[in-house]
Image (cartoon, rainbow, N blue to C red; front, side):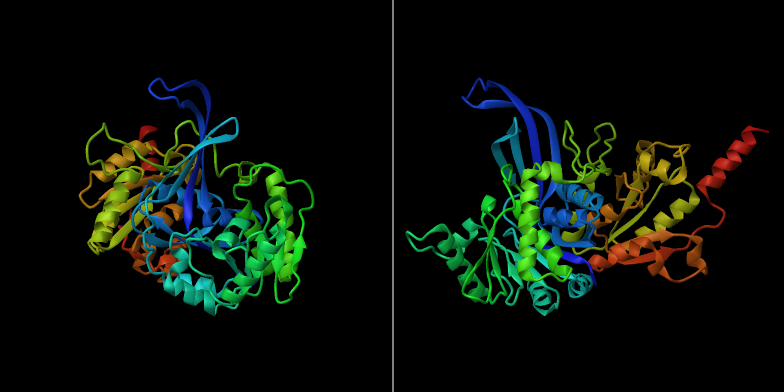
Length: 484
């Protein structure tokens, strides 16, 4: 592949709540589900991106993320799956689909998040990465990303093969896509069927109609357990049957099909070859247990109480207005951005807060309208600095930081780097402090966070660091004095 596989579309937070039903509700004749576990995963375009990344491809996801706990959870899950997120701003709430299940059967699906908001404008870096892609998959879930005019212009201009997985509530495909992959029900909604026509005739007529309307190179209609029907320039469609029985949970099978076809096209396969690969992959996916079995084990761990994932909320004795955690940061982001302000963020361990830390935080706060500190958790600090660190717990460190007048909010993260945190917060400015900023070099693009910030047009800067201040040196001096 000459560039990354780009997945573009709407991402949702899917949550499966598993439980047992042993009784009826006393005030209504409905079953009571006693929750035993819950699993979160990216849905929509996010799921397609995870599937592609699981095959070893370099995957970029262009999607809209809200400033709320759901958006934070999605950022963490996608980062854990190896997906590079290039986020657009999403007003309102993160869309969520919550499935209540007992013994593997779905009892009820609860959707929340409300009507879709209009995604923000893409940065120049987003448009550049689309232009450099080896393949682009548009995973449209009808919530607005595929309608964004600048993104559509970029899709029309790219030389990479474009696969369009449509949605009945979404826009028409950009003219000239290599392959569109609707399922049977979507085809029937998009192209009225002829009464009395056979299943294959309906699929073929619909596919040819969409191919002409969208000026697409080919249209593959997925037929569930019966494979797919491919229509291209010729008048005779190609039917690709499944290689064997494919009974099971089909949730996510369409995303797996579209992702597999996109990867094959990125490797130079013909459209007919890509569809055959996609049918085989989707069949194996369903027969192998569906989403639960296909996702990486560290992506969707079972939890008794769903939470914000690698982002921590550390309440301080129930004090109102606590500036620590996902909810506080989300509220701050909404307020500052609504007023047109500049969001500044910085990060680190901040173990044994000293004058050097304070100087960096004060300088950072002067660059914008709020300062968010991304704080390494205890586990993250131990992984970076050894089992004897941190000296202060994450709870104490977050409380000390949030008490400073120059700090507006604190967000604790578990990962070695703040990449997932930054993808959700999307600061306008990321600040690093260090003595290299005073003459040791001026190549700020060497900072690992700079590449992440460029995804949405943010900037990375360094501020002067006070010489002679070091947590490690403080610990060494203290231990030396104790041993005298």
